[in-house]
Length: 384
Image 1: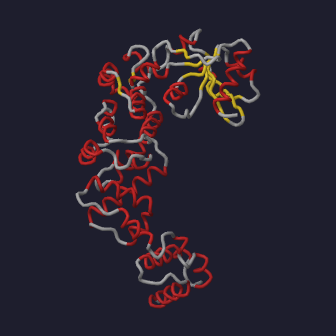
Image 2: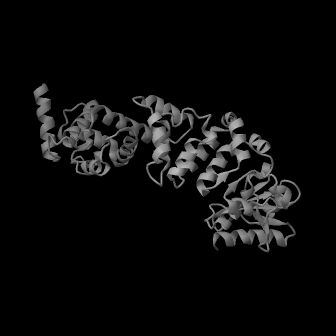
Image 3: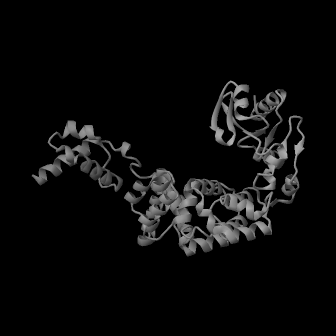
């Protein structure tokens, strides 16, 4: 079954057992926007235990909040008991009108707060008062921004004014939730207009450490982000770059509890950026140590920091033309050193592999096992 068919199956089964059940929230919004829904959630009159009894495979992922994950053919669907006693009362608890719609079992739209009308207007506004909605869960201030960027909508004047008054409260939310919203924002299809809207949005006010570099901030306002399709790492690089201070970059990224891969890649990009700004070029070993991904990201960042940045294609070509681009390509391994140069102390294997790698990358010696081993033996002889 397709995803929507599975959701309809769950809905029909609970309805047939006497429990009003609706497809709700983002799935309904995305349906009317003509977008593919990432998740399809349901709201039901049934209690959690009744949902569990109705299906073979379930997980109580949020049973304290009335949510059960129903698993059909390996795919999970969140089924949540009504907040309140009716679907209207349940929808009244939602954040924004565009998320406060539901589809009945006979495919009738339940839209007590005119969410479909706001979709047509391209408008984001809260179901209840903006004040109460945002203070109840301050992360909604960033969610509002995210929806505006994702859909190309505008936020109501009342909503923006409320965010301006209460933006300082966003940091009360769990950092994981804040980072999750920023990561979703990073994946937006960017335009110059969206970039400017984002950089000036009041939801960013509590995050003075983000986009604090004056030139980057100005360039984003002026020309937008560097590519229409950003990824998480590039976005965070632009957000936290600090000249000549990779330690502070790492600290800022750790504050947002990002993955080790994101943190270390971003720090490497900032280091490569600083190297080019200091020296005006990269040497062969710089390119080798960076790798193609970091190199490409550094070129993107330099495009916002320098009047004459490096040509990305040229730098990538230089990298690809290196004698080796990975340590696995070196013609000699640690085992080769043990076998062919047994007089080397074990503690020095790492030194010699790094030495040979640097020489090969710099084209001072050919990447050939016999030549490399001979070089090592000669150096040891000269030192004795």
